[in-house]
Image 1 (cartoon, rainbow, N blue to C red):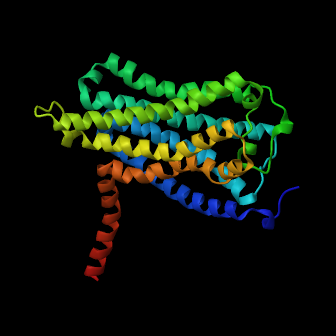
Image 2: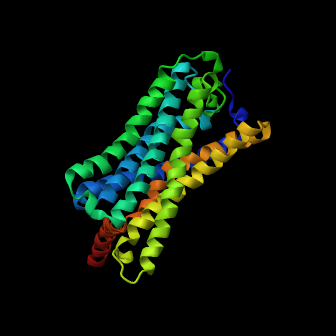
Image 3: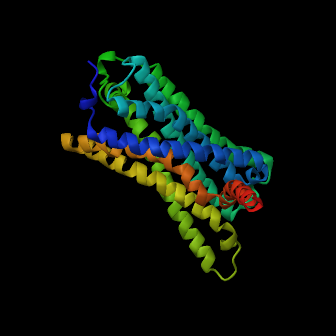
Length: 312
């Protein structure tokens, strides 16, 4: 039986309004960012912007494919269509995009060390393909293959799905049926990228500060400051979204509690959605030239309007 409007929980209504508002803004800004890169291809010659574009493309897929399923559930209060096939598709899309996003940020965090302190490494095409493009590609292809095998092709009992919970209860078959595979997924696909992001960014801050304090600087802090701040902003967004979920997940493994589960289900698990919802807005600060380009676009009609009024 489908829930009525009165059955929809207030927390779902609040989350629906917040997510839809941010989703519309993120979609519009993503569109303008893509147009900016298409009309200003010289900005894509910078390797750091190429990685950022890859991350934005992953986020755009999440905005256009995954988030509509989330908002539909929050609006209606139930999963529709209530089938195992739909649940598998939803879980595959969300798991793949989440992992691809985390791996891409982890790869960016490592590569940023080379871009700042050894930029000549990527001048040769072979090294650029092997050490820059291949890791980014692997961070996208690997989750697609892994979750295709573990979610789509893994045998499931359709009675496990809960059509009254977000993402059908987030009950992936192998998580309960295969301890080794579940542990591998949690450690490699969730924990490892976050650890890499933390370590890479902490060491980057230390190296930058040390380099700045040296008398004979081989790297200009003023010149490379933007690349450092760009990465730190993206890394902080991912950490703020993922660390609470990882923490409560560990707590559940140590001592399962209904109270912790309810907090995770109602609040913490949805924090990861804010990565794709907020990243396009962050581009206003991460890409100063994009901000100037946007200002020119919106200022031009105002100039024409003022000119027309003056003529009248």
